[in-house]
Length: 69
Image (cartoon, rainbow, N blue to C red; front, side, top):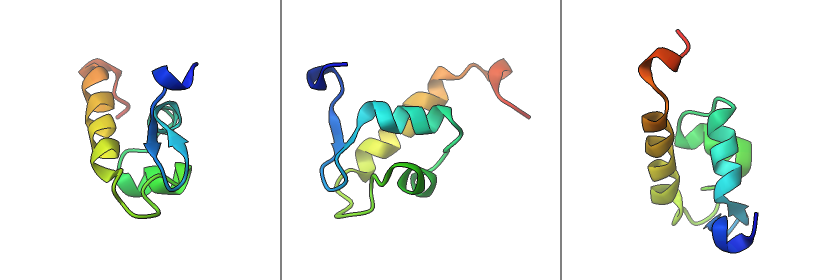
């Protein structure tokens, strides 16, 4: 995926959006889990709002019947 289509979310750790989305799909559900899985948010913290937005977007894209119990 070209960089223009995969924005850099975390400048400090050089983490792209696709990496955060992959971590979310793999089971990371909060900012701490994303930080541990990707490094995003482990520097200055400026990206945490973007990470939070991606978490919400991912949650909204999962249909209620698809959630694991």
